Length: 286
Image (cartoon, rainbow, N blue to C red; front, side):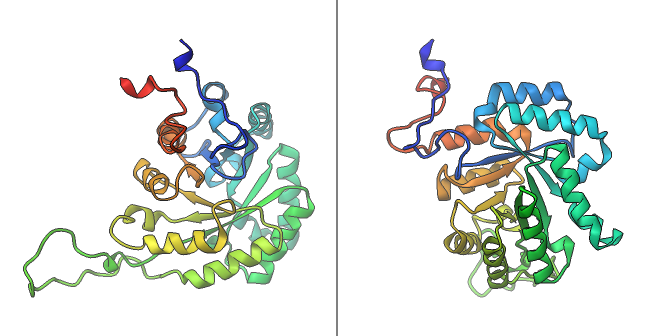
């Protein structure tokens, strides 16, 4: 039965033991679906060694009793899993300048380890963003700014063969805003210099069409920031597979909790020539 044991990780491998600096998997918590403590405990006990972080997406923690949130964060910490707030801080700005500092203190009391800043939703000047990063760090928490990468889907070539010179009807632009990647990179670098621990990239538009075009955007981001300082939001298993195929098991990904097993099997098949699978050689015989 030893063939069915989960593989143990060593420091010299592509994915060392937790806490990891690369190959990080952050899973979604309560948001689209309500996860009870029992469900989370089952996930942590069965897959905990492969889960690095838990994210309360969409500000869902703001709708829950503080006692429940604290119990969830305590449960995660027992399995060496950090807890992130998700993108919610932007909703506090209308309450005044002191609201953000109070929010940081409350997050610390509830057991959160990371505060995510959705830069697009915040809509604050760059210096204010950097001040938020420093405020989070001064409270002893980790800061993770989130940037969105968007582009016009009309830039994507039409699939299928077509006769040379055939008329192709123009496709309407589906996104008014096209992200300036150079600006994104400059702001990301400044956030890292201010103390941010990692940059979250919401690359949903790019991921959906990565095999057609715009994979160059991902390459440019990773080339400038590095794998260790970048996490990509993979909204579907196809996106996760693309990232693993392109950049190997060391890429940091945020995925839905229902995709954890699929993602880990993808990482396992790419651990290198001496590491065929995290599941042991018998797993892929079925």
